Length: 231
Image (cartoon, rainbow, N blue to C red; front, top):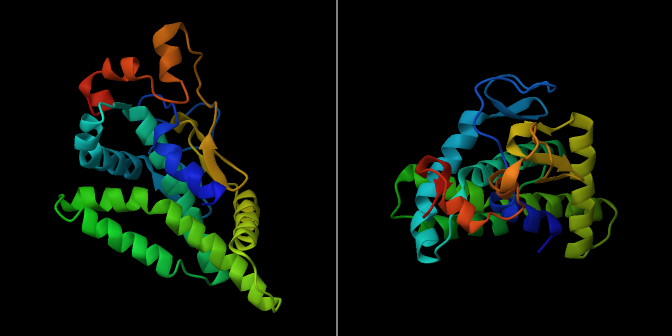
């Protein structure tokens, strides 16, 4: 499994985000309602919130069984990072003329079968979140395979991933991909990773728990219903 996929799939439980904002963030170029600027495209706050809400509804029973609770801001941040990275991956795939291929198709088919009894909006959210890492990996590997073919060589999967990852880094740097700081994520080395982008300083135990890299279960369980997933 590539480093990119590990980070992306872990994203939904790694970030601290402030409450939903209805206005631009001071010191940034983000307009109201925009969660990420990805080349010529945008990911909206509504996209993030809808996906996060439906994904939460889909996994609540699993969280209950494992006695886990996720603060909604962790979930929203992870989803923002996922959607931004996938949006970039689609544009990169178009530029290079590659597709995700069979591995991704199989992942989507497997997820569709697993969530077939859920409401459609929850199915869509689960598939979007849980297929993202596979899609990104597949595009990176396809770019590497393309370069290998052009050179008349055969790359190992690791080498193809390395070439594809570098293509992501170069594209994202050239297009200045940015995620609104309220989501606690940033693009680094072609990946969406946790960032210390909070515009306020944590004071007291509750604030510090809210900004922890992993959700503190006591803190999460004490949040109002609207601010947590599970519990």
